[in-house]
Image: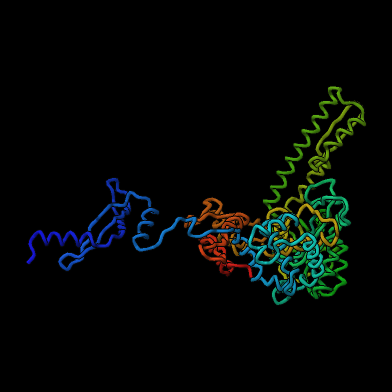
Length: 598
């Protein structure tokens, strides 16, 4: 029979022999005196033991004041885990950006772009790497070669360490396959089965050239505002939604009509599309080009009239301002356009904007002319020739010199607005007239206006190619075939971007659902959801919206690490934990995050 001393001794021994463990306690829903709801967390070191057949706990220490990571380490150690210093647990031998190239590669594979380029071979891998690189990090070919070593794209596609000669050779290989690649895209997006409207958009732009030895470089009208520089011209063919299909490069002094003639031949002879409606602006599809199209069975057009032709319709013709009293579009006919429909439109907001701009430019020009008149009056500028030289320097600055009447004598200079010319131009404000041979049963008037305004999609592609995303300009290549290959790479990269921007719209500032316009003549509007994106800058979960390039930059932070554990000779590739936005970006393109690009 045990004594009291023996029983107490047994209880103490039971407590000291029990196992120690970490317990975390969370209290939620506590409301303080100020009525604020608070949650509290605490951690304790407890010992579990048996006493009289019952399991009991004893708090050995309160750990709540310790940092969370220290509590985690103590908990792991008590559970029997072997803890070693971080530097001795494993070594990350290299970490490379992966997420951005992986996403673009996954989209390229989903679109069948590798197969479109050709059969599997080193040339195809190099070409695909050039296209993906142009999307992710546009740069010169030499800079791209160096960058391949600093991302998983180079090692996974086997292009790391490629030489400049290889890259230039693959550009020649790619341009030799241009017709086949573009024919494949045309069958996907312009064939009657997928393009029931049988429409295609075409427009021309330019980019300046660095150097003096490119045979395509010439002086012409610069759409980049780079006066006095050599340039090239290139035209882009797209489907009605602006999805790029083909690109053609021309000498820098090529006019719009010449390029249009060539693309029509490409569409018919190389793509096999003999029934198609070509949509282009008034400078592209001229009367001469239309006469040529009339000789090609099955080819239609949709374009707009130039200002002199509209002015002729206004002078006692069928185009009267009263047509727009109740509606802002009306169909008219004129004997100068037999077999064609003329669709007249008037945009009142555009008319007001043009009137405002014209007044501002006239006032700015008057200010310049007033300075010259003051000099003449003070006698510091004299002589008809000298006055004329000074007037010539400023009269065309704002492109409204035609609206002024100028009188120059050896001792005087006067100027005045030409009210008649200004009034004549103002009469055309906001008015444009479309022309097409398509019957109303195939394309009604609102549909024609919408189709013509779709040229804005093509202009957006030009912005992506030239400035926003792909940085095509300036042209540094010297050989003609290399310039064409450079434009083709940028066009195929734009094809990828077209799909990526649509897929990633929920993560970016892109308007996911632009409002449908009841009136096609009215200007486009942003949806309320897009306006909320721009205002709030983040979604309801607090995730920030990003630009397209900003999202690619965020994806680049998803890295692939080469990990070596103690005692192991091989390295194990491991991806960092993806963020919610990175995971969603891959979900939106229906792809899992790949460990390697193969």
